[in-house]
Length: 162
Image (cartoon, rainbow, N blue to C red; front, side, top):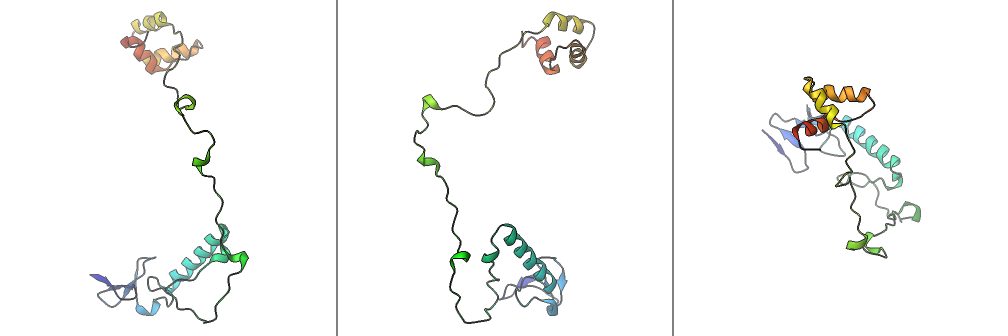
């Protein structure tokens, strides 16, 4: 049975704690002084990953230490314009000049109806009478430069398509 103590450490019954990054029981001497959830090794790895992600996203000057860590100095730091975050300007979709109405609405996606092309129905039925399956008929027609899906051939033979 395990429990959380008052500083957020996941404690085990035998007096060890479980690091929430590597999920291994460790002794209390390996507990990170900066964050009670991690061991000293995982704490450095997590901090480096956070810094690398912040640099990659262009937020390196916005790196803030863990809130559980106590501040080292009491001097206040004035915010300079280059480290202040200014959100990106976005376009709102409701500001369009001409809103959608029924007459200028075009649905996206694939077409609902297709123009059926002429197929050699007699030839398909003739090949079917020679005990050929729909896939064999499709490959035979493909050799004659007539590209038809075997599913379409199945529909023709079932009478669902003319």
